[in-house]
Length: 545
Image 1 (cartoon, rainbow, N blue to C red):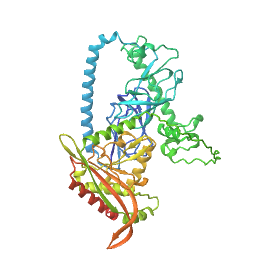
Image 2 (image 1 turned 135 degrees about the vertical axis):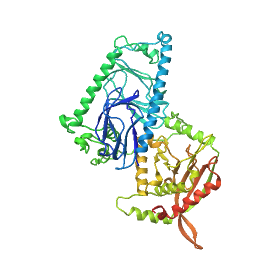
Image 3 (image 1 turned 90 degrees about the vertical axis):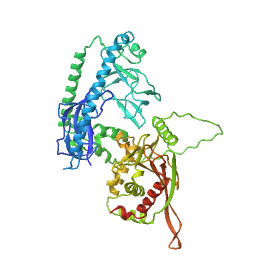
Image 4 (image 1 turned 45 degrees about the vertical axis):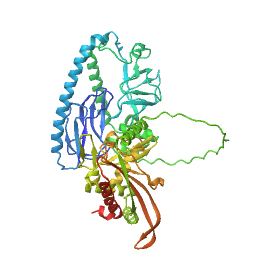
């Protein structure tokens, strides 16, 4: 299945990018972690890494060409796959978006020209070398962010590429990188504080620069800069970008450890830092010995045995105490989403009990195959996808004007994380085998727990599965993950007396609860879906045909 890759937003202010160099050609095989291209942003020239495996089927932006963010950059898929419809559809969409964006920019320019005279009395010119950094938009749905940790403080010198802070969005906690050199002159959002996107976050510039006027003006500045003309600024940016391109080319052409330097992809560096792995201990499998993502993930450090600390005891006291913990951005987003779902959708639930004896035997047989691992949850996800094909009314979304019938089946799988709940999505689930579903679920669940999920990993579900069976929960009701029309709650497998062929025997059963939006799914439709689902789960061989 072809994957569309758009021009990425590689900095907080990036509106368009230039493909400085393609490192892969059409027809080349691409592995996850390979560098596809060098992309020049408004800040620097950066390597753009592939998160997919396959063949590079199409390049939409040639070397040296400029393109707005989110326009078709490349397509990766299976060798020989027909992508003509994707290309033609994307080109028309891109033309429309570019035209609309141009019209919008012209309109904004007119408004700015009209208000410039009135605003000039209250605006402040930014001194040469000073950079005002605002709260970045780190996800497509982010409206405000919380500074979890500052990694630099006022007075610290920073270099381009240094990590300034850890910022918590509605999706994850992400490191925010500095694109400038200088000294931290001011911090506008303290640790634990929440601020809207584009509000003043910090100011960087030459040490000792007075930025009190900028702070008092909320970081806003006049369009005029007394010491640097726009032409000089543009020349400086081009010069800096050219230097960055040459540096990148040198790095790629060098051996991984030449001159004592270690060359690794940005993602590999991030994962290694999170896991506490020294990159010097790794051998790179990328181009020219470069360390990539899979090198870090596959690295097994030597085991060190440390003596356990002596146990200590603390006397308990009968003192009442409470603690207020600030709600995380993720928890706020969950509360808002589930609240909207619960209070807007007229839902109802249906329960069914499934005989799991055949499923347990089938799973044991499947997992006996070398390098194969399938969970009971994988069986349920596959069964749901196949049942949705037979009952398209359940694979829908409600709007005030229409009911949307989805021809594709994307099953979301709820994953518990420290801060709440995320729902990564297995795309085109009905077209995947059990082992492919298992691998996909494990990969996305791992990314969710390590806060590595991309926004695209959590978008587009048409149905959701929530499983609490591993916690011993036998039966529960879930809140619908809108805009889905239904969600399946999966309980634990329980050994109990059951009646088979008129005899009481020991059996294994599992309870399932389907919660439906009554606006799109009626009781009879939900019941028929559960009957089909039960048949698939109780007879796994029917899912292998």
